[in-house]
Length: 250
Ligand SMILES: C[S@@+](CC[C@H](N)C(=O)[O-])C[C@H]1O[C@@H](n2cnc3c(N)ncnc32)[C@H](O)[C@@H]1O
Image (cartoon, rainbow, N blue to C red; front, side, top):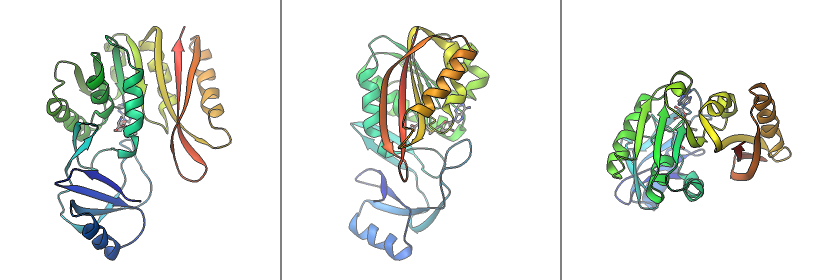
């Protein structure tokens, strides 16, 4: 199944297999699809972007994506965005509590921050290293009318975490390497704070791998915590899963 990002007016389809013929068929089947991109391998680099080839249609692949009444402007060729994580964003927004101070590390175009702000009155800080993604985040915060609720910072979280204050909740949606940023999350977490840590695991070691990494890092930093939730988020290839572990800091 292709990922279709955009709206009824203009969307981009992203496929893994097929060529020009399949691209034209897709555009015929979905008249709103104005461009078809083909992935050239997996996500790569610090920005976690797919290299993609334009198979057919408009070279301008910037779209306005609709999700649960929210609007996200983005170009999938320059920023990370996954429409498959829509349910996960809703889950996180439901877990957030009114009045919390929330840090979204690795915030991208700000879909998690906006999903939370739409449901709860919270003070949210986003930190994203990709300048283009941070620019889209600024636009999306305005588009969804959350200017007063969400602060957006374009920076490496490791360089700025010390200046952000303390938080009731910390999101870490960078599944491949988020565990490496646990020391920064521990440093900004208030007592009782919740950390949502994402990871990639095999079917066999679903949560145990990531829990092992949490145990090691927390011991090194003398942090006491309790695992309060384990969530399978999405399938991630053959017998692999994107998972989330929620920790409460003691
Ligand atoms: C998996 S994407 C998630 C983006 C967004 N949260 C979303 O769900 O659409 C991870 C993001 O982290 C950003 N990133 C990677 N390393 C970072 C760092 N050290 N500090 C801040 N952002 C970083 C990448 O540029 C990328 O946009």
